[in-house]
Image (cartoon, rainbow, N blue to C red; front, side):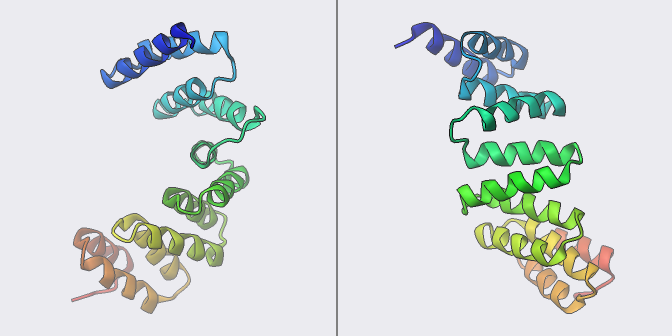
Length: 188
């Protein structure tokens, strides 16, 4: 057992819990000096960098995580896709979100990310499929439903959008009201 590694890792976890990102980042750097491919340190550093909107640096770590020869988790592929989307590299983001969905079909946020990228790529048929998966996995989250209604409106499918809005009204009336304002469809 490597006590020095455990000390660095757990002190970084404690520092993160205390909101000391810079101190935690120093611990992750120490770990990575000893093992440049340490999955925990790379993914933690990438997460901090992404939270600070340092997209290129975060992407570099996610690139290493997906290219180390180790099996990267669905969450790593999702996070890489999210960063690529922020960098407007939509085709690569699409591949990452799809890989995340393939690795873990229950990862609702991967389906949501996939849907958002497909919307941006103007592939509405596929976006609807992805967003439906998201809403099946997270039926009480308004985000997928909102995007799904927007896609239907963009396709001039007001009846479908209205059904979704009525569904939203039952558990997220503020989101339904927002869609009413945006679409001009009145539910009352």
